[in-house]
Amino acid sequence: MLYKFKSRSTADVIMLEPNARQILTIIGKDPNEHHGIVTVAQIPGAIAALEKAVVAEENLGRADKDKISESDNAAEDDQNVSEGELVELRQRAIPFIDMLRRSAAENNDVIW
Image 1 (cartoon, rainbow, N blue to C red):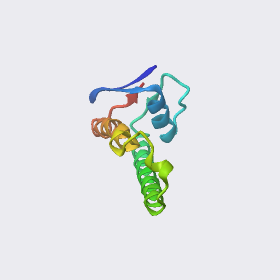
Image 2 (image 1 turned 180 degrees about the vertical axis):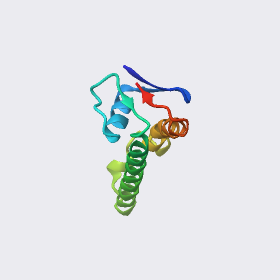
Image 3 (image 1 turned 90 degrees about the vertical axis):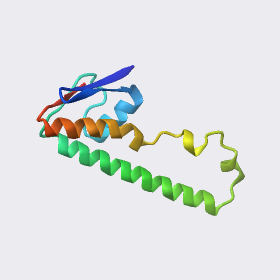
Image 4 (image 1 turned 30 degrees about the horizontal axis):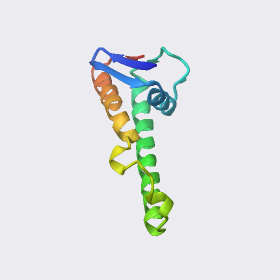
C-alpha cells in the first residue's frame, strides 16, 4: 500500500507503507490510520522529532561501523548488501521535512 501526503504548498509525497508508518510513528501520529492531518501548529514538533530521529539513526550507524571495523568479523564481511544500497531515514525523511517546512511557511496543513 502507498501513503500519499498532500499539501497546498508542495507536490505530493508518496511513500511505501513501511516507510510512511515509520515517519508517522516518529511524529506521534497513529500509523494505523490511513487518513490524517498534521496541522500547522503541529508541524514544528513534527520537524523536530524527525530531525532528532535522523541524528539518532546516524549516530547508531556510526557506532555500529566502529564496532565492525574494530573486530575483523568475517560474517560481517560476507553480507551481500553494500553500504551504498541502504536507504537511511534521512533519505526518506528529507522530502517530507521539506513538505512540512514549506507548508508551515505558507500556513497550510499536511494531510494523508
